Image (spheres, one colour):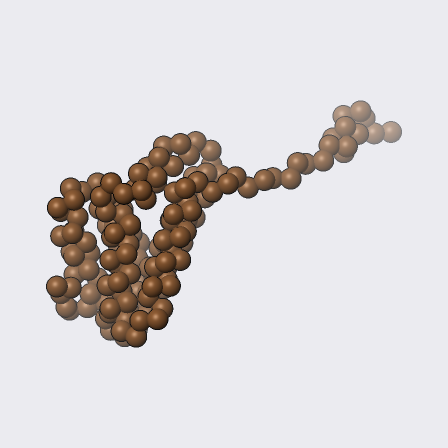
Length: 157
């Protein structure tokens, strides 16, 4: 005969897990990833597509705009593992969108080929996130430096 403890354990059904609602930062990052990928698709010139993508990324992160402040707030409030993972996943979607545009541009010889597109996307995303901590007058120069860093043998100006 089964013990009382095992009968109770069998009767309890696990509660279905409910995914938490996305934070504003997660939604904005996912919207940014979609916008970056969609902006570059119709462009015929991969170099111009990359520069437009980079411009959109820099604009989203520069200054004291809503995206940087929402990300910082979400990081501060993300006490549980699920929230931190959701924010990291949203960031990864932005990186993947960048890598997609970079792969196309690398295939056309428009961006540097000595760094893998995935790694280059990671570096660019880190640089763009750093723009939110820059003085507004320095952000434009640093965004141009990101473009110069990524382009193959050409300056962005």
